[in-house]
Picture 1 (cartoon, rainbow, N blue to C red):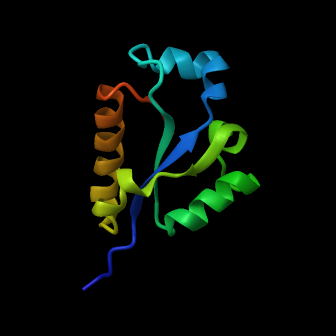
Picture 2: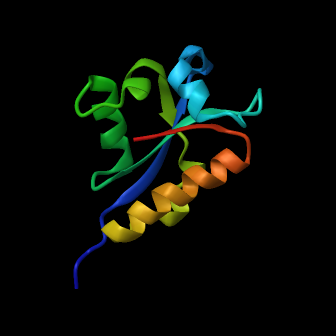
Length: 107
């Protein structure tokens, strides 16, 4: 039986990301004061993936420029999971956070 090793993860972004027009346009329902985050999915440990983003390795532009820290309280209960479940969960977590007024970026 294959071992599940995919993870959804959430990275807190500095509020300075709100100066980026693309980020603002993607978040018309952002509630001021709520966190700004990046939601991703990986086959790596989320800590390793975060480090790669920050080092510029397969990095999201907003994470490299504005990434602060992982927010495991928003994702740890789901991990690890099979690949297809992680793909679906990445979308669901993003939707849920947007509904809560977060600013969300997804690749």
